[in-house]
Length: 174
Length: 174
DNA sequence: AACCTTAAGCAAACATCTTTGCTTTAACAA
DNA sequence: TTGTTAAAGCAAAGATGTTTGCTTAAGGTT
Image (tube, rainbow over all chains, first blue to last red):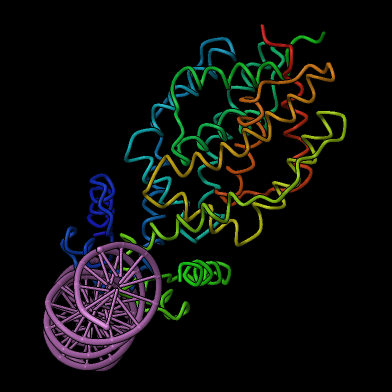
């Protein structure tokens, strides 16, 4: 049931449908519209729920190359490739326009924060000097998502440049 | 006529109205809904038009303190205060979810780029070493907008920290 | 003035969304 | 089995959004 609904939403978003309403979703999912009206406050609420589910299901394994620079570069590149897929872009935009706020959005950031923490932890164990986790989020993740959301270009070189920048902040003194 | 419509949209967005439709806007503006249906493809098109107009009308004067660090800090703080206002947040979100894409969004970035360029130009004339304009956009502007759009906290300290970070990366790239 | 063009108003028809009371189904516990 | 509960279906009514053809007003041109 819920699976059918989530799938329907996913299909519609994937097709770039511009008029996503409860009746439309219900028909696609083969359920009664009333069910949707009763379970969710409005379309945005459902949309955000599905978006969170889709965006936090990572499956990407965390890079572990023995060097923070290579780890971050690989990680940023993977993310760049992932979030520029048209379907992902729509989910991100859907999340932004949804009203539910804070809580669910933090899930996204939290996933990234945990991943960054893990890479930093390993780097420090190796004796590398590293930027703060917050800096990685601010200067690698934020610009990537910002570019996607505002339809600015994102590619491997850009991801790499961001990583270079954030590492330069803690670079050798002098 | 157009003024009345823009004003109506502005009021509705400002009030946090969640159901902004042509009929609603029309009533508020004292015009016939048909006019709106005929002139704009859909509500998002109109919303984006108004959002661009509102977001690019800056009026903020560019800081010129004699030090890039102070200029950037002041600038970032002004922007932070500005874009966290509920009305601005809604406009930003509206822009993100609107479909019209690229062109109009670049107006936003371009304004910031010009401002950053000017401050950097002045700093270089004074003999300061500066980050690239692109770095300022990526590491100060992007994180600020990212935080606003994803409902993460933004305050003066955060803006200041971003400026500190971007200045820390100057001249340290390998 | 008479004409033409453009944009807006109006009203009716139409489509779609949303709510609601009631019925039905399915799962589970006594 | 039987009773209970939670969730889904159904259908009808109501609200809202959207389209359309036609009329009216305003500006500019001959």
